[in-house]
Length: 421
Image (cartoon, rainbow, N blue to C red; front, top):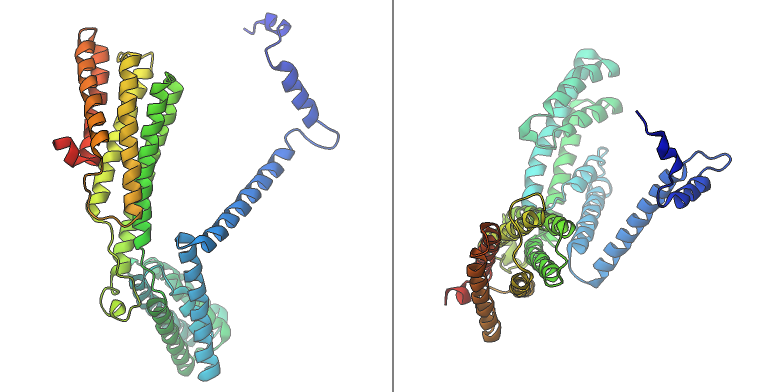
C-alpha cells in the first residue's frame, strides 16, 4: 500500500520543478507543446551548422566534402552534355533518356559506373520491350500497365540487376504513358539510353576520376589518433585518482566507438580497391588518375589489434572499478606509474597518426632514446609493483597483471623495434 506519510515530505528540487511546470502550463497551450518545436529548431540549427562546416571544408582544401562537390558537378555536367548531344546535335525526340541515364551513372568509382551502366541498360531494354509487348496485347494504356508493371517490379528484385532493376518498371511506365511503343520509338529510346550511359561513364572516367585513396589514409590516421585519445584520457583519470564506475563506463564507451572507426576503415579500403580497378593502366598513362600508393593493409590489421588491446584494457579497468566484482584495482601509486606508461603509448599513437597523414611508409623506430628509456623504466617499475601486489592478494594481482599484459601488447604493436631490443 502507498505510504501516506510521504505526502507530508518535500523532496529536494521540488520548488524548481513546480516553477518549470507552471511556466509550461499556460492558457491555450498544453504541457510539453513547445518540446517538438524546440527539437525541430535544434535539428534545423544542427543541419545549418553542418552545411556551414562542409562549405568551409570545401574551401579549406582537399577532403571528402570537396570530393562530393566534384562528383555532384560531374553528374550535372554529364546530364547537360548528354542533353546537348541528343537534343541539340542529333535532334532525337527521345532525348530525355540520355541525360537521365548519364546523371545516375556518375558513380563513386569508374568500375561501379561501368557495372551500373550495364545493369541499367539491360533493365531499360527489358522494360521497353515488355512495355511494347503489353501494349500490343492489351491495346490499351491501363491494360498494358496492368500486364507489364507487376512483372517488371518483381523482376527488379533479381540480384543480377543490383539496384538498377527498378529502371525496367519505370521505363515501361514512361513508354506506355507516352504512347510511343512502336519499334522506331523503342529503338530511339534504347539508343538514347546507350548514349547517356556512354557519356556518363566517359565523364566519370576522364574528368577527375574518383580515386578513394585519401579516405583510407584519413580513416587510418583517425583510428590511430582516437586510440591515442582514449589512452591519454585513461591515463589522466588514473593519475588524478578519479577512476570510478562512471569514468570506467565513459572510457569503455569511447573504446567501443573505436570499433566503428575500424568498420569505416574497412569500408574505405574496399572503396579504394574498387576505385583503382580500370584506372591503374590507361587512365594513369593519360594522367587522369593519381599515382600515390595506398597505406599497406598491414597497417589496417595492426591498428585493428591496437583497438582490441585498448578495448580489453578499458574493460579490465571497468571490472576493477565495479564494487560488486571480485577483482580490485591496484594501489594508487602503481596506477600512477601505469598512467605514465599509457600516456607514452598514447603519444606514440598520435605520432603514428601524423606519420600516416604525411604519407609515411612502413613503420620505423618511432621512439627516441629518451622516450624508450622512460618506457622501459616504467615497465620495470610495474613489474616490481606486480611482485609486491602478489603478496597482498590474488584480486589485485590479477588486475595489474592483465593491465600490464595489455600495455605490453600495445607496446609490441606500436613500437616493435624498441620493444624487442
